[in-house]
Image 1 (cartoon, rainbow, N blue to C red):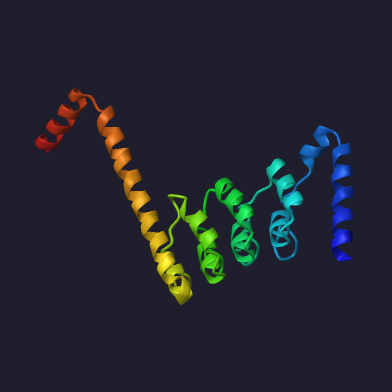
Image 2 (cartoon, rainbow, N blue to C red):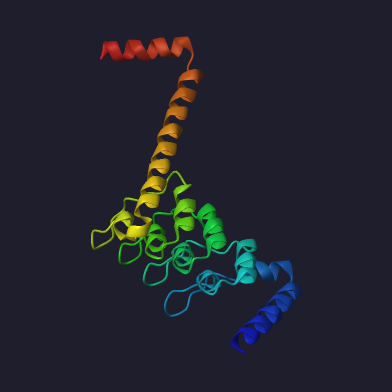
Length: 193
């Protein structure tokens, strides 16, 4: 019954929202929060509501807002196992390493819930740091279930390898762009010092 009420509410909301003028739509704030600091994005992710989630993406809602406990929608997606939502959010947020009040990251939540699929997608971002410790001093690898430990370590090795390859490609790219004259100037500056 609650789901039907929720669905009919959303259907009415979207129908009524479509009737608003474009200037009125721009004034609607979808980043308002409740007493716990949860935004519409938090609720869409927590409930796995794809329709609301996609709507919030279209209106450019803020998926980086933490609630009062510091939990972001990305952390909730990892916690609830919503891989598609986690994938999209990880592409639109600037900080995948954000920590909640306990010092946990989205990576911590994915590991604790044994969601290696989400761990893998988080590790696809070069800027993710899987070695961040929470307030208890635990890194995500410390929270790995023994049955997943080998697979998680393999994922970490692939992540480190990709990061190293990326660094080498940047160095090679920069070296190729440098002209023989600029290389000579750089060498002479080093020998003059």
